[in-house]
Length: 451
Image (cartoon, rainbow, N blue to C red):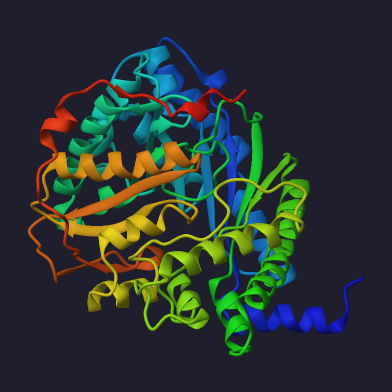
């Protein structure tokens, strides 16, 4: 039974500790929109998105007003567009422009799914879509793109890794007058989940229903505030405290998802209970780690603290929702986290340390600004390393790096909004070109044979 204390506590979390619903994301299948005529396919896609998501933004705003719960973003994810391009042929950028037009019509913040799943190789439409990604992202404002290049079952497609290193660099170059923003809307995955509500990696998987609502919650500020009240707790007690806090945060996401599902007349999918930070002061995963006991994020012990946090968030949240999915855990995007930004600026946090942290967090190397002269081969090497961590450990990993064209270590890029700003971080410039250019596939680890 809800009591007055619980209500007042939730109000305090919202007002003082940056608690919010980060996103309600409607996943829409486009499999019934395929047509051998690309123009007809685009029209079907536009009509379906505008019909299904017509009231998505309005519903989110109404729930916010009625319940007093901030819902920051309303988004749409769609079937990987490479599938549609394989059916129709033609220039995939037409699909990008169609998705952008639909996003503008329904008023969402982002639309994701300009994607390809190539972990086992390239099917019809995959290469064409991947080659078009820089132009598609440079030509649109709301579109996000992702490519899955590896999995625990399939191994790592090294040809795709090479290609994505080139496309990340091209995307940055095409938008160098806009702080290279196109690269900030492009993520490369290993073990990409099909029900992820968070951008830039959201797409609507082929095993998902025709239409579904997924919710992404966020509460780093709430967790930090809870830990700060008990400076003498043991680590066991800290873990228990984080679990209880994650439960409360996830319950709010469950409520919003259930209400949105009923009002929109579509199934409720999952709650992604990730701690997704923002540049706002007090809304930082790094600050949680520092509250646990680190002088600054990046210090020795950072990976251990993050492992504790990630595990406790999952354990606490899983009992609070009828269905937990997506990424679920702790995000460590540098430019979107005030504490991470400070640690990177001071030199306490390096890319090498971030890579170690990705072995125990929810995603991977996220929103990291690198020097503009970084070669495509080095970017591909970063992608390959991160994919290997995901493949071997059976977890989702990803790379979203932004080559800052014309800038060097110590300079900064300013994206604004939730994407924040970030210092240009140093990378190891020793070339992996010979390795990357070998091509082929890194075999899946032995435990991929589990059945």
